[in-house]
Structures are given as structure tokens and as C-alpha cells.
Length: 206
Ligand SMILES: C[S@@+](CC[C@H](N)C(=O)[O-])C[C@H]1O[C@@H](n2cnc3c(N)ncnc32)[C@H](O)[C@@H]1O
Image 1: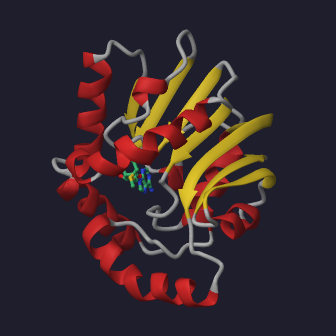
Image 2: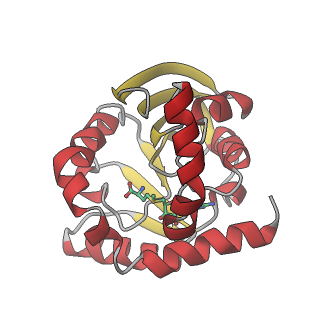
């Protein structure tokens, strides 16, 4: 993936950051928050990294008393996450960083998680390889992701709509994230369908 692809997606998230929470308000209330809670059932390590923290919607669910670092490559999204964490008095180290090029040493975290992130990372396999590198041996990677549906017709419809969602939201709706996780060399331990085969909770290990 060329650098300008990354810049384009970063700029898109900067652009939508002021409206992001409003755009998702309804879905957040109805389903997203319920799915987020499921991710947090798995966060039982001492050192935790959230990738693609966005506006910090997961901050409300962070376990107390753990060392938590969260990254995002959009300054606009990160500013909102910082405000949210401060207003809720949540302790988290928020860092401007690209998941495709993490500035952490090998094996730095017990748990790494992301919610609806690898639909938009410009080179998802590269990002997943980086996560694998910085995860401790025996650690866990938890991903909540929407993916391309398996059915032939629905899959084609998602392919057709994909350029529109990328243009306006920076997110691909037709990624095969399970295949990407495997291609990055991660071992999938659990794959749960939360909404048909489109929204999945994945648990993997390096
Ligand atoms: C769809 S939003 C999800 C935000 C948040 N995780 C949530 O659940 O609301 C995707 C987020 O991933 C971030 N992102 C995409 N590619 C990234 C990359 N290469 N490095 C770091 N963050 C990235 C975007 O800036 C954006 O904040």
C-alpha cells in the first residue's frame, strides 16, 4: 500500500471526526454498545493496547486498574478520545500512531483489541502483522469487525456499495478480515457471528 493511500484514509477520518459520534448515535445505542461489552469480557491481561481508538467510545468499558494504551492515526479522532477520557477520568495513554508501523517493542502487550478498525486500515495485513509482533506470546488479540458477507448475492451488493462507504467513511464493507488475520500469521481461536456472518468477534493469538 502506497503512503498516499494511508494519508487519504487518515484525512477522511480527520474530516468526519466532528460528526462521527452523531452519525453512529442510533446504531451505537441499539447494538454497538452491546457488542462492545462482549469484547471486554476478554480483556483480562495487565497490559492492554487498543488500536484505532477513534473518538474513544470504548473508554466507558475500560477495566479499572490496568495499564491501557490506545492509538489512532487521526489527530481529529484522537482529540475527541482525549476529551472523553478526561471527562470520565479514565486513565489511558493516548498516542498518535499508525497500526501499520507501531513504535512499540516486540511482545509489549498481553491483550490487543480493536473495534471496527481493520475495515479501514489501508493495509490490513500489515497492521495485523504489527499487532502480532507487539503481542506477548500466549497473549490475546480481540477484534470486533464487520466483514464481507459469505452469500454470493449479498457479497456482490457489498462490493458494489464499497466505493461509496470508502469515499464517505473511509471504511470498506467488503473485507475478508478472517482471511487477513490468518494471512498475517495469527491463529484464530474463536470466531463468533454477532450479526449473521457480517459482524464478527474474533479471538486470536500470535
Ligand atoms: C470506524 S472507526 C472505529 C473507531 C472506534 N474503534 C470505534 O469503535 O468507534 C476506525 C478508526 O480506525 C482508525 N484507523 C484506521 N486506520 C488506522 C491506522 N493505520 N492506524 C491507526 N488508526 C487507524 C481511524 O482513524 C478511525 O478512528
